[in-house]
View 1: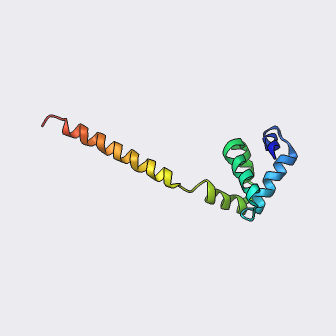
View 2 (view 1 turned 120 degrees about the vertical axis):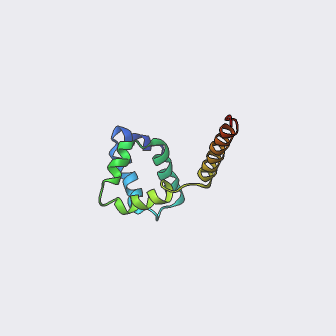
View 3 (view 1 turned 60 degrees about the horizontal axis):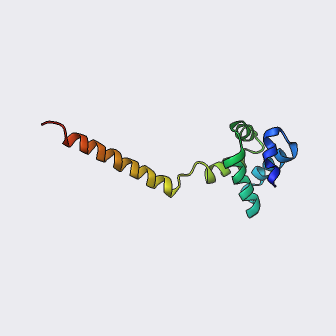
Length: 101
C-alpha cells in the first residue's frame, strides 16, 4: 500500500483505507497496524488527522489509537526528561557554588 501518500492529494481510495483502519482499530492485522502507524507518523498532515478525529463514526477507534500510540510517553522520553532535569540541576548547582559569598 505505497499509495497511501495519495491521501494528501485527495485520493478517495487511500482516504477510505485509512478511515477503515481507524474504524477497525484495535482489531487490525500486523501489516495494517504498521501501515496505519507509518501513515500517522510520516505521511499524515495536521489537516488529515483533524479531519479523522472530528468524525463521530471514527472517534472511538481514533481515541483508542491516539491513547495507545500517540499520547503515551515512552521509556526513552522519560530517560531524556530525567537527563534534562539532571543537567538543569547541575547548572543551577554550579552557578550557586560560583557566586561570591
